[in-house]
Length: 149
Image 1 (cartoon, rainbow, N blue to C red):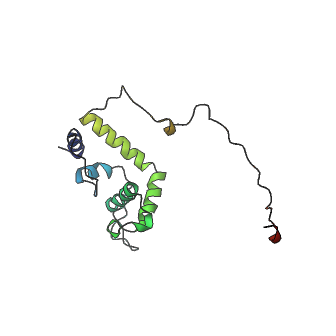
Image 2 (cartoon, helix red, strand yellow):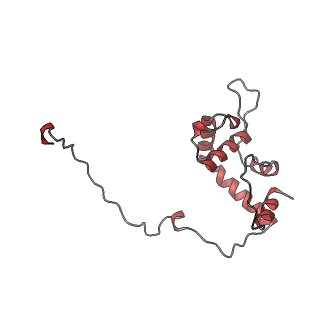
Image 3 (tube, helix red, strand yellow):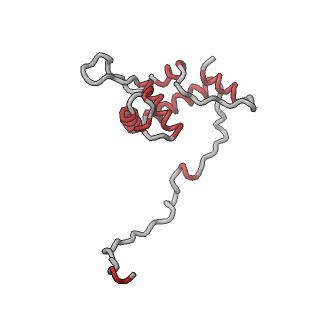
């Protein structure tokens, strides 16, 4: 049984809620790490390397809790390291690739009903572009004199 199957089985129980993912489960990590860029060797001469798994746990913590990167608990590594990796991976479409990979696995194992889909209108751009905003030119400041109040 994989982590995806386990999650689906738990969802069918109406009275039981899934616990938040604190750490990425091993089987899920095995799939995710195939998509991530290659890590630097751990014995390089520079700052200590923060493993990608720890970084991704930190990224998920920030996304789940909404805390600031600088307030990230030390168990996830440096907040600035996690933020830098998040920006890098976002630029490389890593999260999209992870999403697609996990969807394919889920579809193969459980099946996704692709016949019916729903999308929120905020998720896609308006086909006609919507209303155009007017440009309001800024003029110089109009300072009141001291004695007018």
